Image (cartoon, rainbow, N blue to C red; front, side, top):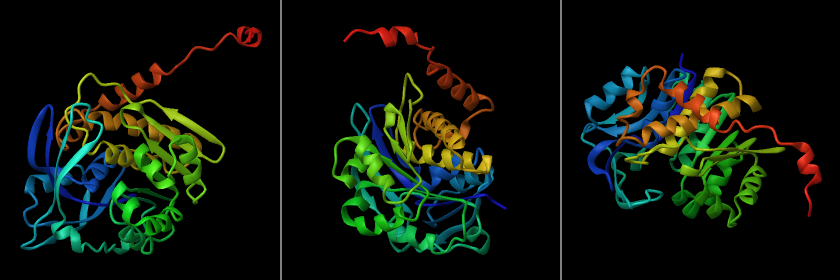
Length: 314
């Protein structure tokens, strides 16, 4: 039986970056997160597509061993489509069009097996749908959620209800500032913790991530890259890898959370190297370990001369 349940959007994206353009390419939060998680554990997804969803996308999921029994296919319907572009620094996507299509009427229905899965990731979807899933699952070991600025702006109370019931909240820096109405990210992280999650992971894109817990803050650098083509799905990949790795380890301890965020950062470095899921689907044995080892070695700071610190003059 699968250990990790991923609920989110399955989409076809049209994207333009300074490095090229793709049309109707596989996308959606569920696609990225489930694929990343599948490198570490058995994954089951819940989502909806139209009958225009490409067969090769389905085949790619199956090759990764992802359980598709919860993927609804609406005959005569069109799959959720997002179109957008990135400017030169590629830190922020600009939306051209969002066509919800079959996703507009999506109602997640979990099977008996999915209700009992121990690790649950609720990707970026309407908070009402996230609450619906939370009401269906039974005593999971861990629930992680992601969100976006649109839900914060229009559905903040429902989102707050979801946050109160999750174990791990993932947000990017802009979303944290928007929700908390504060500029300082440390203040934001601590305020979000007060809502109920045991852990808040604040994603900072190319500048890494911050992990907040009651008694600690841990900073993680991003894996450095010489070139990137498309940042779409990086946050979902990060989150999916993190959840999948925790499911692989089997327990959500403080040390395991540090390990999982480290792995998530390195997995996200793959997806941005190509458009859509092309690079994420082609990770070769040993590539991920090489990146995790390299990133770990880059932050292995030598011990300081404690005497010089004591004697420093003001």
